[in-house]
Amino acid sequence: MNPPAPGNRAAPASLLATSIRTQQDVFALRRHAKTVTEALGLDNRDQVRLATALSELGRDLLRPAAMTALFSVQQEPAVLRTVLWWDDDRAPSQESLTAVTRLLPQTRYEPASARPGAASGGRIEITCPIPALVARDLKVEQVRSLLEAASPASAFDDLQAQTRDLIASLQEAHTQRDELERLNEELTETNAGVMAMYAELTVEHKDVVERFSQEHELALTLQRTFLPTTLPQTPGAELAVRYLPAAATAEIGGDFYEAVTTRQGLLLAVGDVVGHSLQAAVVMGELRHALRAYAAQDHPPHTLLQHLDHLLGLHQPGWTATVCIVLVEPGNTRLHIANAGHLPPLLLTPDGTHRYLNEHGPLLGLGLPQPPATVHLVEPGSRLLMITDGLIETRDTTLDDRLALLAATAAAGPGEPEALCDELLDAFGTEPEDDIIIFTARLNPPRQP
Image (tube, rainbow, N blue to C red; front, side, top):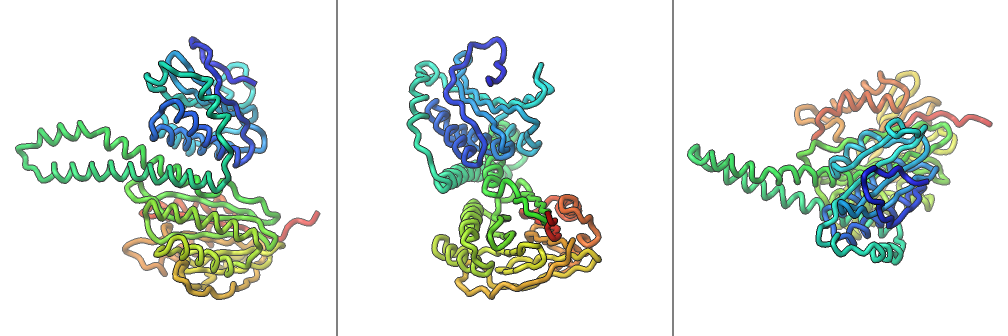
């Protein structure tokens, strides 16, 4: 199938068409975008923006059925056209589409209803101008050769590439922010007699403010790629999660969650790297990917925490993190809990009673032993709630009071996990000063065949 071509243009020269079915295909799409944009002379910021936009859309639209990506060069005007298209009823989320459009305003989404004769499917086109000097001597065959010569990369290589992009974008954003703050300090110290100069400089440096906003949006979008794309389907377990970054003026943080099916049962985790910075987000990504790798070895929860503690001390000395791990046994009747300094999970039973499971071990990164995991029985229909502290911490209320209010609100809330997440976010998540994660599960015995 070929995507609909816009009218009144010369036929574009195709560079690469690729099918997207798996997460690895999304990683490969990101690499292709970096290779093409570098070969076409786009600056590093535009390379990262297109790669990040395609990664975000690829993750959001990923389905077992194939989606196709096409890179092509339009000669008049000289632009790189990237098109994603599909034939089924999938559609991009408003969150992803908004984030991508902020990074690349020349993004255009066409659902089936906007395409004459199309009963289903959709199409997203992103255009990026090619520098005039490159366009003048552009050799399409050379770009194709570069794509063909590019060697495949491992998942770890892809993670490292994303991390490097995240570091570069945040460093640029911080540099621009510091420059803006310096200018504002100088201007604030002037008297009324130079207010005209202040206004003039504010107009002159308006683009600095806009570029900082764009780079911050890029950083948040990249940070979101460190988190899981989907939740596992486990018989008898209904899962829901909400992730809300802090207000735009804050640094990006290190909150994360994980859900993975193992031979020992369903493993759920919520964690928070202590601190708010670019490096905190990088440490978060390393911990989450390490947790998935260790979980595949069927370790009990407290052993997983000890492995993460050793890894943190070895590769990120001086950093600490809190992590709570819950292992739900097959059958969903027992929980194993190990908690390294994190807020306790809340267990809500169908009869309306609730209690915090307050087992605690030391923070990760201190090199201290973790106590064995504790076991709790679970009544059918019980709900489990795990959060990060950004949901409840305030400056004028104690943590115990906020935990009590959270428990009362959750106990009176809906039983369905998605609805409960929404209600808690509405009640506690207004203008957060820190990242927020709400992770809920409703547990019932699996249905017998």
